[in-house]
Image (cartoon, rainbow, N blue to C red):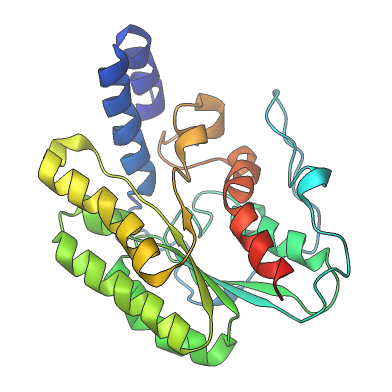
Length: 262
């Protein structure tokens, strides 16, 4: 039985507080990308989205965005480059790279016409320290207008000091802004067995950073898929291809708001 199945079985007999703990544990497991598993080790690879996203079956949501949420073709005239700096959730671990939410985002912005593009600089197992070390080169090579930062989960699960995680994320945001790029920050969670003080400090740092730097925060990025067995791979940890449109929709609104200001 997969980890997801075990947790769902437990959820069926758990009270609300226990269910909350189960959800936190699963969210953390999703974020925990196998260290040393370098299926996607290339840094700063442009996504290849020559076709439409694969259809979603078994009653799952349709691929891509609902028509009402899409921007009209030609509505963003200025060429825009979006850089995604993340871990396995953004590196499309266990599925084809062109099925991942980053590739779906690239398809969506290309619908607008012009020379819009999304660059995926995500690596499985990445930490905030690793992302910071790679960031300057990515900024110089890609010159992004927007950077989506999806990092911190692996730091938390390894028990890195909250102060270090916060410092790294601050430097990432500052370097992006110094380079003239806007930032969208994706919030992370860890299980409560790390202790309430650490878990609360970790969860709170994302809201603090978003407030301090006035950047959009995408909270609960994985919550909708966390307990849906048909949206998890057989390892019970990573989202399936069918889950990727949900991740796209979770992050689309702040991206669309940025594009509309171009």
